[in-house]
Length: 371
Length: 147
Image 1 (cartoon, rainbow over the protein chains, first blue to last red):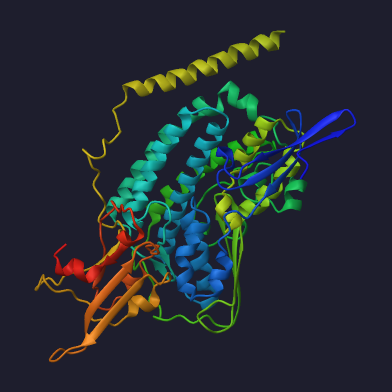
Image 2: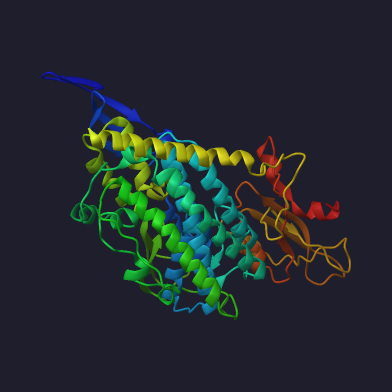
């Protein structure tokens, strides 16, 4: 590849960003065609972390794929667990117990909160401010402690099972989660002042990387990025699953369609997640945390899809089975892949340092794209 | 011109507010744990490597009946166990239980599937080694040596 070309009066050169770059958050490589300090053509290169998860699903019994789901998106492992057990349940016709559904929602929302908190910290870190990540990690550590107490792990959870979950939550968990909700609510005004109100932060990401709902739709963008362009599309509302229809919560929407709007959507989502958590803890039904299922579950021939709202957008598992306990095919639609594909469109003509900010606001998790 | 100074004023104010928030941290209690000297309590649900649970009545014995369910169900194939037939003992006797912890993903399938609840997660989080073989645990020997 030519690293430098002279066309007419312009001097263009190619700059390689990644695969090991602090602001690509994983092994993502972006080839940037530059003109001075302006990016003319950014091209992401994927596949450095490819572990053929979909193929692995076809070569082992469905239960053996459960630990893999957590390794795709290390920041939303429980949501990925939830989607996978959901698709198996739908295919095999198993009904989880009401308590299990509530526990799944509670743990998934805690997982979403910790993902958003990490994102908030690293976005501001990408922009050069070091302090907020320390505060968000303090909050995040509380969630990880709560989840560790019930799931046994801190990041790559393998907590959900077909028909329910592994461990029941106890009064201590409920108490700690309630204390956490209060704590997080008390922290939000601080973030409002420290990050949202900060003039440098605002000037860096306002009106940066603007996109329209039309552009988002063409690229299949979902999640907070889509909602930032004014489309109120959230799987928890559009295609309600688990216990979500029983809760009262809003879908935060911003109409700016820039990086600031995606930031605001996610921060408001933190508040909505806290609301869901509070209601779920109040309404938590009694009963078994795991439905009685046959020891060996054979997957009946046919197809099933199950969509969940991951912190980054729409996650769909589509499973085809042929009657054995090994899936014939498992297709996983991950949100970050589509969210990344809009990046060249957004970053064309941007300053190099703004590319980092723009990618940070897309909240990419590279292992889930490569999987 | 007026807008310019307005931005300067609100911007400067926002920076000062941020600094006040940061300065407040000086007066909050220290949360750092001085690790080797201080330790946090590990939750009883923590998933360390698996170990063979000792019998409550006879502490020198384990409860494994060598059925091989864990070996069959393990998604990563990290369990290898062997058993033999002995005079006067019903069923198989466990002679070898090896866990390759380098491959284990701590999913908990073996612990759940075990019909005699002979397996459980340990609370060991300080898994450090210089060689790969340091993580090839011999669970049967751990029971015999009383670890």
